[in-house]
Length: 115
Image (cartoon, rainbow, N blue to C red; front, side, top):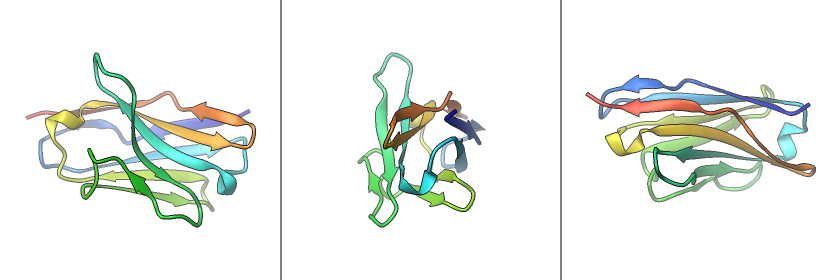
């Protein structure tokens, strides 16, 4: 059974930082493409960053230069380090795994950037 469990969200002031984690199980993590998406109220879910073993990470323009995606295959965990956060970054952040058997989503973690 595939499980993706996000953590690390919360309330942060503008300019602050958060690190999101997504712990994965139930599939071969090292061969999966792992991504972070986000969905703000009233908006469509959008890709934030993607990482695949052996390839350079991809970043959407919204987070380029501020966000860093990384993975620890020994821990089957993908991270999203978010710096210089802005109110526009407020959203539910989701972890996604693209595997040989299909795509899977986590339940999401809320990030709120507000003073």
